[in-house]
Image 1 (cartoon, rainbow, N blue to C red):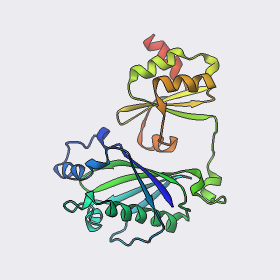
Image 2 (cartoon, rainbow, N blue to C red; image 1 turned 45 degrees about the vertical axis):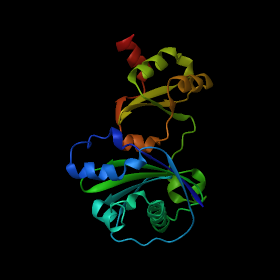
Image 3 (spheres, one colour; image 1 turned 45 degrees about the horizontal axis):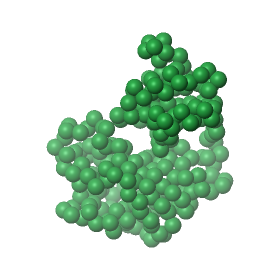
Length: 234
């Protein structure tokens, strides 16, 4: 059984108000703008059309699904998008695609991010907990994992400044600053326990992976974030 945690980043995307069709779609997905949890079994799902998959990392897969395909699955029909069974089957279909394409075992927690929606397609980012993969997963073996790398999310730039002002040079090795949606992210390499404690006061640990952030976010400062901010804002 897989546990799904679903959230949406659509409210921060530039397509808002850009397309009449997108507004229609967003109304259909309005109920996704808060966390939901789905528990699904191992039932099969058959739907029309062919979605596009791209493996971003060992535990992250991007789905590009056309609006036409969503309509074929019944998700955009009047009132059908409110039906939990429709979403139940839809997410099972995504899991089946991941298993068939990459051989991923689905006994794990899955975070689903609605990354973007436009007039032609919806893009989802699915991130699975590490136990969701076979131990001999070749993709995972190729990926370099840095256990000293941490990622924190901040709602305001002022929070980033306040946080960096409290740090000392011995608290970290390198810090990079990213922007995605309406939030700021700090990628911290070699962070101390003190840094982790302070980060919880000004921000929170990011749900996104660094791979997703590099793919869809913008890097503002590379490696010397604290030094650069102190130089220009102190």
